[in-house]
Length: 85
Image (cartoon, rainbow, N blue to C red; front, side):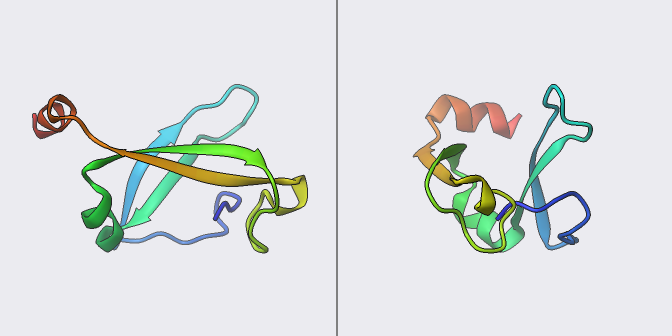
């Protein structure tokens, strides 16, 4: 789900995955996941893509005619090792 900054509360049970500065967007775009979910996905590389289609009802992209698609792959041994350091 995608929300405007401040419309979704995060807390100590959430993990910040990434904060991206995008040209023309005043605030960074942040990606969050619950800590329990992160434990299951921490060995994967996640890519958030925008594709044509119908988004979820509450999500910010819904009226735009697009939806988010998350693609995943297992991290390589080298990627995992670099995260340990």
